[in-house]
Image (cartoon, rainbow, N blue to C red; front, side, top):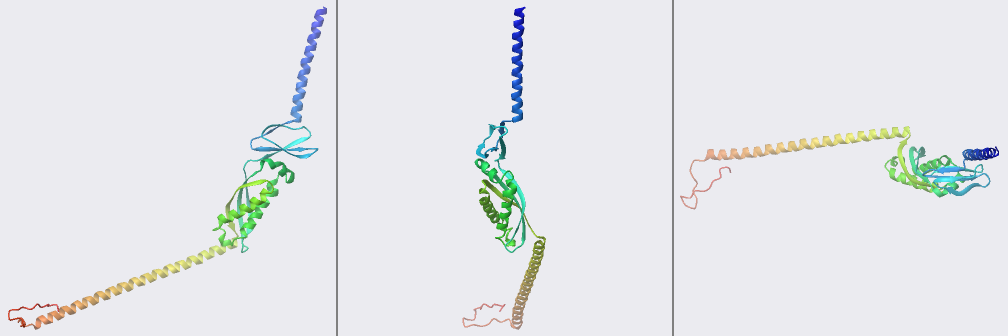
Length: 273
């Protein structure tokens, strides 16, 4: 009986150890789930560490598995891949005509400076930095051109806007990749003026075309008249020659003229003369 009791006691202790181990493992899993000390940073991302005690940390979490201090540190993720932002901006030309530009901007964040960006600007950097910078660049760019030259000088306008925007964004460690001007629109009043001008220019071109046609027709008629006059002159000249020759033949008595060359010499006579 004693041996049996000892075996049951030992088995009971082992069972308790097993149960305790499961409880401890369960508690650990629960703590890991609740406290969440593990942070996974995805591809093309960086993590900014914010401590309740010391604020924003300068070290940046890289891609992959990272750890934080639960309850003390929180992680703010930033996407450092190429981003696209499209905005409609308003400016004014050199001659103070309204110009609306739809601007498409491609940019990315400087990977090792996202902590500084978060500390100085926050996560809504597009609203606070990029959008105002686009508006500023568009206003500065369009102000350098008369409204009639903006379409023609589109590549140069794009280059100016890109350069202004690049200098502005780099102050916040935002790297500009490209700028595109997809639409350029003017005020309704200016469009009416342009349309009326085009109509007037078309009228002038039509009038000039008709004038050239009339001049060409006139020249053709004159050339035709001159040709007909020359034809009639040549006909009259030929008729005159024929009449003279005919009169000479009528008056000829059939005798050949005598010459100093002798009685048998026959002179050459051109009857057409």
